[in-house]
Image (cartoon, rainbow, N blue to C red; front, top):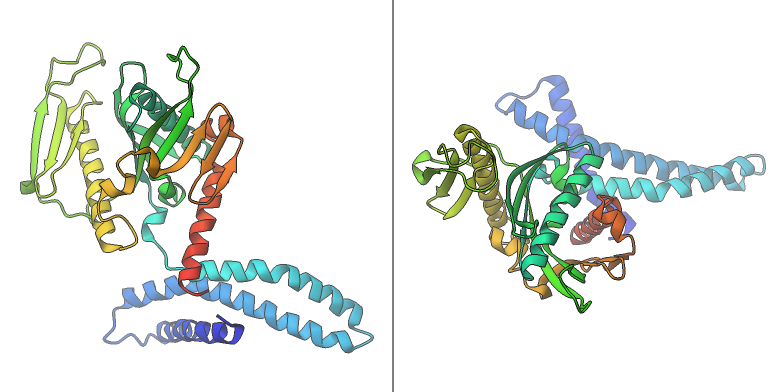
Length: 356
């Protein structure tokens, strides 16, 4: 898009904002939904501020260039031109990002699900390590990490790990983690020193509330049973475990982490709501998977989004061709380099789609 066409593209946005501003300032909202107008105004406020900041800088740049021909003003003008040429790229980028359609789920908390796929015991061990990686990253961001359901494997790994990560912007940071994660390393049980390849699937779902997903209680089959496994004296004495089946979709959530049946039911409903919300989002957005199963793939090694190569201390994200040799730091929760690169890549793709 050329500069002139781009300015033409921005004109209707500013005009609409000014129209809303005038209507609300004059109280001319007869026959219109005041709340809807206020929502439209709020949605345009930041983009218009960014547009005006960029346009003001362009005007100042033009004025400063005009003064270059004035012998008395030329030294000051050259300094101003240099300053503005340094500032304009960042202002333009900020403006374009402000123009991107907002995903209202970006600001939400998230449900994280980690499961071993191909690789048996080694995959289960790495699933446990990945869950710990995300716990540490959440801690570094000041978010609250709560394990909702942990099913341990025989060797200390995980058959399944589900956690709630609570904080502002959690989903925006972690949504690109969904997919197949591949690990390459020599298992502790490998006597020949051979490198094994295993995979783990990760799903990150935006936390859903009752407004997002209407669940008819008649569509639920709720079974209670005695919890099994480690847990102390209370295990197998009361029917505290809960399994909820959403009959229309076949989605099943089981929870037995808490001693209270009520708490287990609350947690199971939170996970069910998030899964159903993601299914609805996937259907509504063609660019996303049509079902939650497609989001993480089958777990086949060829579907990987990222590889963790322990012998080389290397992590590679295959979607953006990013390779870093900081594997120990990343496994310790220092993921900011990867998260930032994925976010910027996503933004660039969306800007290209819009022709910006």
